[in-house]
Length: 142
Image 1: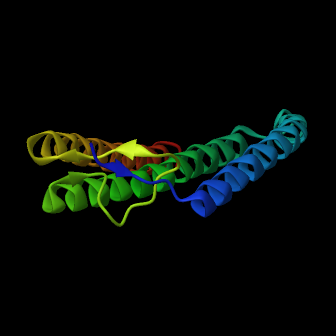
Image 2: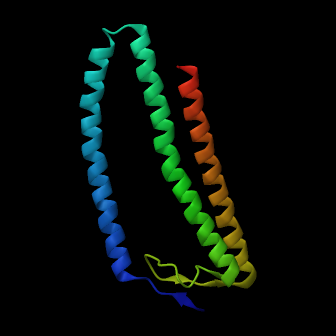
């Protein structure tokens, strides 16, 4: 049984980045609460046209902000699946892993590669749907 060895430096960088991301999200969540209170106070005394413009911007921005990571995830999954399918090995030799994993070969590797590519296509489809939703929100509330 062949083992794909983990890259310890990659694991340390990934865990540090994950920890910083969680910390940043916590701080941004606290700031979001204060900002939403301020916006609520401001918009409760505004005319309906101003509220509609705010809603338009917020919904379109949310759709685009969610589409970017979904699209990047989809592209990454497609690259992983394509590389694995070409090599006939999952995970591909050049890919780094967080822990030691068993290498799949031949038909099993190709099945995993195809599943990974399908998940990538689904994520890209989700990104496209989010962009379309953002465009619809921009048009609908415009």
